[in-house]
Length: 328
Ligand code: UT7
Image (cartoon, rainbow, N blue to C red):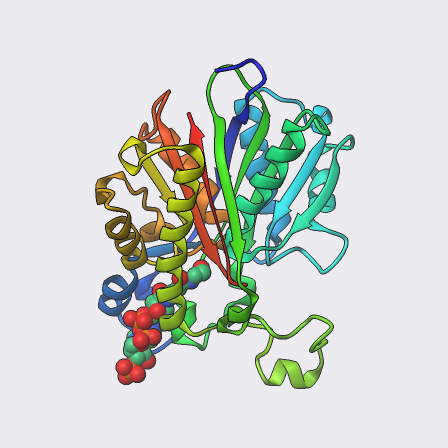
């Protein structure tokens, strides 16, 4: 590996303390543990406290990532937060996080590519560090989806959770090198997964609240199909870019929306299911946080060893998708 390789030099994640079980949900909406487990593979999810905005989750994950690399926040040059549940429309959650971290030498912005946001952020940061514009970057995926979940809608409320993951990018000579990346989007599918209220299209009003426009709406079945096709396509595209074959991948970290999606993607790519990292069972869907949280868990759990090629693949609202290969 060359001295100048750019890659992940620290990773960390955070899940809030409170755990919401399927049994808890049975008491809230007309659902059952059996349905949730069979249709989604989810058993539990973490829910942030009332006084924990998404920046508080991002802070814990960021401290963990910086700590792993023994990296001082004041040395940070770029801070990107991928989220659809920022503390407020503006200023950016990246700026809020900057203050909490004390990373006052970093340029800051938020990035919205829904569930693919962290991969989008990683791609952008990778290019900016690679071309020498910044020497390092912290890319955070953080979501408090419980804040935009309609707790009366059984179609969606069983699916989501809260959490955050962060990766520090920099020059590395000891692994973590990013090998290839690709991104994509198709805005024609936007209305299959969206939150309509609260922006300039439908500013918050009594009517938008009455119409429950400040919650996630999803056409689950169609999103499911597109997710499988787009994730498999992105994985194939990034493998081609890297000049690699699927057999060379030791571990896949897919977006965690549904166990059946993860299984279908593995089948499509002819990758054994054992190589797929799964956190959806205990985290639910964490949107932009799902991949960094799963990657951190995989590393802590010893599923990823030095020299392994890891494939990260995302899909989300927009629609957006993306994939990245990292040599650990
Ligand atoms: O993160 C971005 C990407 N997001 C995704 O990829 C999510 C993709 N979609 C999915 O994961 C699945 O489509 C869902 C888990 C959301 C739904 O599973 P499904 O197998 O597609 O179910 P469905 O929506 O077709 O609903 C089947 C039945 C319906 O009843 P009827 O109309 O057949 O009588 C639903 O009303 O299941 C019913 N249902 C439920 N029943 C019990 C829907 N939600 C629930 C529930 N509990 N929570």
